[in-house]
Length: 249
Ligand SMILES: C[S@@+](CC[C@H](N)C(=O)[O-])C[C@H]1O[C@@H](n2cnc3c(N)ncnc32)[C@H](O)[C@@H]1O
Image (cartoon, helix red, strand yellow):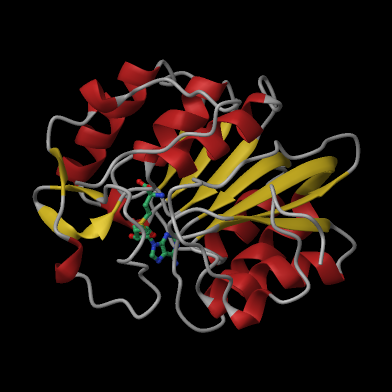
């Protein structure tokens, strides 16, 4: 049976009570070529959409611990789905928080999402943008928004993650961090490398779907020890990027 893993130094609150429809799913239903079914960590979904996954507990703990260093500072999330990762950003204290998610244009989706945000304690600090990135990011930035923390888990196809990263870049504060989910995809890794080319330091986290972090200024990402019970591999497209918890090659 798959078991959750969270590194010893990275505890995060359990927010499951906000997601009564969250279930552990059968990984075989997913057809995404970059889904690492072989990693024996539970894959959780909303029972109404069994093929779209939430970040797992290992990944939520990395998101929470990094975001915690930005408590009271502004953030943006691109691709929030039903608010699971959003709830961790809210719990970490990132505020104000812009949430860019086109599904929020649906009134039922939005009202369920708002209940999650309320439950996490973020109703007065979370600003929902029911739009697509990168256009929404540019709109918000041009209207004066600036962000210290960004979490990117939106459109994973083609050039989209790179465009999302580069859309955020001009509006990031001098001290800033950008975290990506699904670094096992070369498209997402292109987003991380785009920030590296802009002068950010970068690192990867070895989790089921891998995460990437880019940072600059007076901050440093948290360290993570990958689950010693798993057999980890590093995709070729990540050659040259340091992995947290592993000695530099
Ligand atoms: C895998 S889900 C995110 C899961 C979420 N981070 C979590 O852990 O609960 C990807 C989300 O990106 C959204 N998305 C797709 N294209 C987008 C775009 N252009 N701008 C913003 N969000 C987008 C989808 O609607 C979906 O909700």
